[in-house]
Each structure stands twice: as C-alpha cells, then as structure tokens.
Amino acid sequence: MEQESTDVQLALSRLQQPQELSIIKLSEPLLAELASGEGKRQSDVSADAYENATPSSLEADLLHYKELFSKLRFSYLEQVTKEKFLRAIVGDPPLMVEHQENVELEAQLAEVKASLKAQKVEVADMVAELERSGRDLTRRYQKIQLQTAQLESLPEQISDLQATITELQNSQAPVSTNPSLSMSLPATLSLLRTREEELAHLNHQLATLQSTLPRKTRELDRLEAELKPLEVQKLGSTAAAKEARRRKEDGMGGVGDDLEERGRWWRGVEGGLKAALGVEG
Image 1: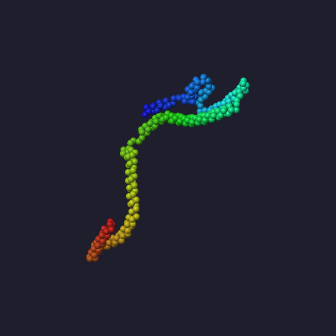
Image 2: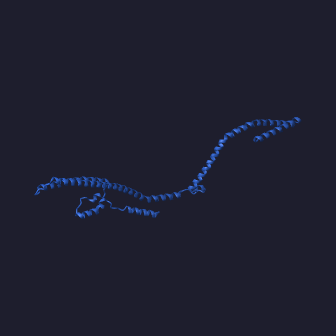
C-alpha cells in the first residue's frame, strides 16, 4: 500500500511539472521560418503580455486588433489609391486608361473578391473550430487540475481511514461465543430466511386454529348444556345414596337395601353417561 501511494505521488509530481503550452511559444518556429524568408523584422507584440492571459482578455485583445487592422487596411488602400492616381496624372506621358481596360479590371476584381470572400469564410470556420477546441481544452484542463488536487489528498485520506479502522478494531467488543453472531453475511441471510419461513408456517397454523375456535366453542357450550342435567342427577343420586347409608346404619332393613340398590343403579347410569360423553368426574 505504501509503495502504491509513493508511485501515485511520483506520477502526480511528473504531471505537475510546468509545461510551456502558450500560443506564442507554439508559434515561434513558424514565425522564425517566416522571418528567415522575408528578412529580419522586429515585432512590437510582446509575448510577456500573454503569459498569464485569460480567455476573456484574449478575446478582448483579438477584437481590438481586428478593429485596428481594419482601420489600417482602409488607410493603406486609400493612400495607395491616391498615390497611383497622382502618378497617373503627373506622369510624362500621362497614363490613359480605356473603358475596356476598366471593364477587364472590374472583372478581375470581382474574381479576386469572390476568392477573398471564400478564403474569409474558410478562415472564419477555422477560427470558430479553434475557439471550440480551445474552450474544450480549457474545460478538460480545469477538470484535470481538480482531479489532480483530489488525487493529492487521497494518500492522506487513506492513511486516516486506515488509522480509524485500526482504532475501531482495537476498541470493538470481545467476540461473542454465540456462533450465530459470528456468521458471515450470506450465512446470516440464509438463517434469516429459514426463520422467516418457520414464522410464516407458525402464523399459518395459528390462523387455522383461530378459524376453528368458534366451532370448538359452540361444541363446548353444547356439551356443558348436556352436562348440567347429569350434574343435577348426580347430586340427587349422591343425596339418595347418603340417605340410604344413613338408614342402613340405623337398621331400617329392606327399605335401606332398596335405596342402596337404587344408588348403585344411579351410579352405573352416571358412569355410562360420562363414558359415552367423554366427561371426567
């Protein structure tokens, strides 16, 4: 990890080395070739003014020089025309121009103007394309500068995050002995799905039992209603049996024996009914 951070920092350092990419610097070889062909000529345009130029300042300078060159061109054409006219008048012999020559010159002038207009359109298209390319390069350069600044801060952020991870690992609670708490995420999700399926099954069973609860309640009410007469009979039989036992103990003879038999008969009937209805005593 440290080696990778060092490599990234070295690469960033190489990218941040100053590079001369100004228009003036790039045009120096071309200007040198033109100067060698036309003779040495000192330019009054200083490259220092464009070292720290901005797009808005360059656009303002371009507009200023366009207006200036337009005025200079008009003044030059005016002066040359006057000079030629004066030479034609004061010459010996004076220069005489026929109408046909004017017609031919106007035709040549029209061709030259058409050619010049086509070249101007071509130059305008080239300038527009250069402007688009310049703006695109400016945006890309600013984006690269921003990404470079972000990359410079990455090693420090990575170190801080590693220190934070180490601190959290040292300060975390002891590992639990419960194996369910130390499972991996896929195993935990699988166990969760199993528990959810079991819960859904129990909920289904509970819903089924709740749906049968009213029927069981009605059946219980019916059995209780049937049991009440039997309980009354039981109480009567118990009382009769006690009376028979008392009379037997008092020595009443046959009448006591009859009551005892009747008591046993009632107990048998009661037992049979309980067995038939499934009621516990």
